[in-house]
Length: 195
Image (cartoon, rainbow, N blue to C red; front, side, top):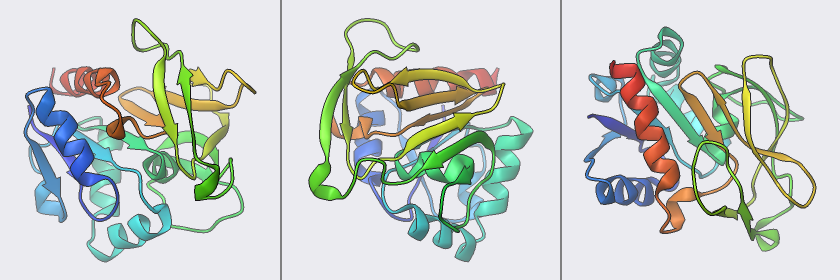
């Protein structure tokens, strides 16, 4: 299986390490040619405006959008990646992939010092709640009819994980904890694309 990690800015190393733990060698995606034969792409947490602008500079925005819309590549956005996959972002103008039918609120919890952890039940994984780490995290304000809500914050019900076909998005950073269940879930989406 070929899984790519968008390697322009953000938590690239952490996702690569998580995939290696699952026996998958990740491909670093920096240019359109790097998308060849990739069945899934992780868009990591980082700074969404910076990543979006770099996707434009390196001519990656349209090729990534095309592959996702054609159904030939699964996609998972974590934190900033969730923002980039969405069709709408409140109060902010930035390059977006515009593929996931969701409206996102950036920095829903405040600044870096307002980061927190929460154990969250997530519908796509079995077992204990997931140890989610929120760092300047977004939340999902609304979703379209084809988007499945997978998780909400227990404290206030805000949406923090969604899926639409083989697109998956989490508001938190699964790559910085030792639990690999969400990476495993993404690999099942990649298998659906290759099937």
